[in-house]
Image 1 (cartoon, rainbow, N blue to C red):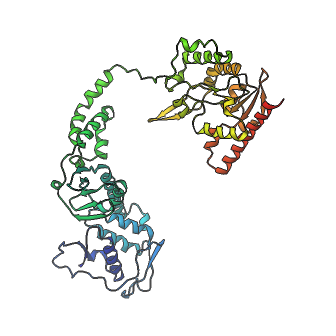
Image 2 (cartoon, helix red, strand yellow):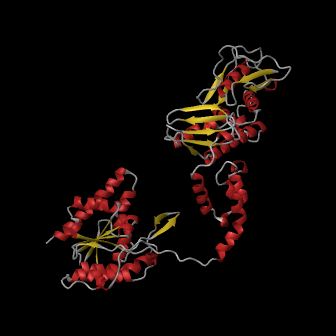
Image 3 (cartoon, rainbow, N blue to C red):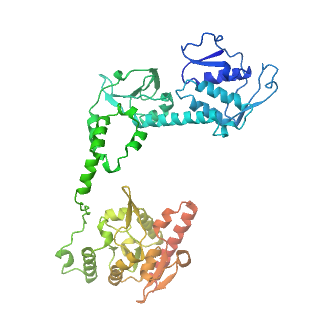
Length: 505
């Protein structure tokens, strides 16, 4: 029996060098014993194997690697080329992290078989291949658990900045493989991760290792543990409790090292009772957002010296705020039109966006900034225009905590149409610039396709004209920069056309 001794459990380079020499001498897998460190071999083993001379490289980063033996006996290896698939290199690097002591022999057996079975790694049901893939999955799972369940505790060292220490018990030899994650995530901390086999230390700039430790070397609970346990208790949802799934994602072997572990048994036992209490409790009324605009009699009755147009607009806005709208329940506030009254140009958008909903002003966000830029380039002062939206409330749906904009429907347009018509009657614009298809549909009553109708004028029954053009938010969503610039130039040209119409004698 040929004995090969590796420096440590993850000595991939040592294994690779030995495998290269063993293969060159045509030593079969069953005639090799792999040992690690000071591990003792069998009584009748041969002296430890020492690779002789420099063999051709067995592994490199080319798609495949050629191997030619320089000292092969007169057998099939003489004057032959052996190509190792690239995938085999990474497979070996990952599988060698497994704790199974037979992994070195298994990898060499795969290498030995690859001489004749070049497609071996693609045969997933082969026992050797399946076993290696199982090992790799176990290593990946252990790496994930380490990243998820390591809990640092703060310790204070006199004369030095605080250091954070964690205790973890991995199932496989993954500590060094996890280093890039922890040094990248906790770069600005001084920390140590203690494990039974090897300890990892980071001083803020350099990584070092030391021999394994015991759990007694790890610090006891710190001040943050109670805070974390309170948080964990508060987010525990008994209605979604699935014990088998929880144990699969957080195996019991890790519980003893987690600060929340003492709570788990209690929370599981009381889950059914807590769920029954939640079901029996009366429904709670959702908290409505407070509308910033306070409506009272003073809002409705204008000052005696206020121009009639402004007074009419105040009354219209007050009526809007006093009315019930389905969208108003969740929106922060109604976003009313703003600008000159009367005004020759009315800019009509679709609906308030996220920032407009919070600010209470139309075209306040990125789309508003682009519109301001286009107006300035077209020679139009925004202060001389009246800006409003078809919908006066933000229509959205919740995805988690994020509010995602929804397109208005025909029903939404009809619901807000009386207020739009009232604004038009008060502002008395000569031309209405419909920004987008929703605005065009609302003001003309027709579903207009943008590309076919952009830049066109549509007469209204009262003699006013509507010019259809792009909505600034549409232009912002275009990813191709050249195409975005084309759309923007068309918007500016349409604004110039509207200004020309207004200023014509």
